[in-house]
Image 1 (cartoon, rainbow, N blue to C red):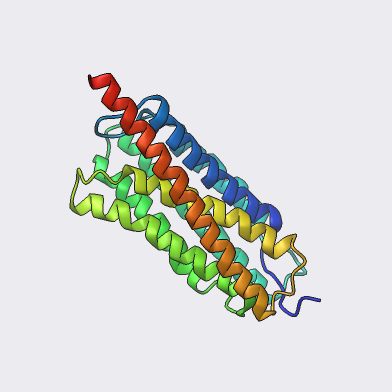
Image 2 (cartoon, helix red, strand yellow):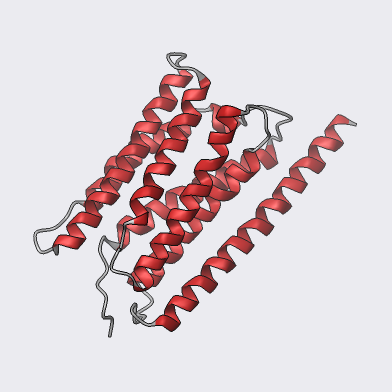
Length: 231
């Protein structure tokens, strides 16, 4: 029997994880199919990503609107989710303005980093009751911080070639959010059990290792293809 209640909803967690996961997969696939020797990939230059952000945000917000029977802590966490999704939606608006030429290209990186930092900040206090939920969201906040680091570095030092770390951190984010969805809503774990916290650390390690191997292999494959096309 769980001694810790979980806030939010299963659809809200899964929807966010699925969008981030597919975003990263398409981004990586684009780099493999149409390798870039420099600059943004074809996937980044299209309006698909900002449109997905703008459309996805209100849909995700709808699933996270607190219900009448929610406890105060769950209402707070629901509004944290809503704020996170809303800021990602705003970053999509910034992306569209960049593509229209109304804002500089750097604004897109800044908005992306701001959305990641906002999510990481809120997740630090998310599920603050501890146990497996608190640990899961603290690790998620760590990933959001890592994901924000690369675009921030690119803002200060353009041309660093951090596209692949950005893709990898995004894939890790989506993957971990999907794992959290299973842990919190479908695993039937005792979320106050310290042994389950140990398993949470282990699952996080597996996710990071798997993503690192996948992205490294994809980067090597893309680099090999570019080398063959240049010879």
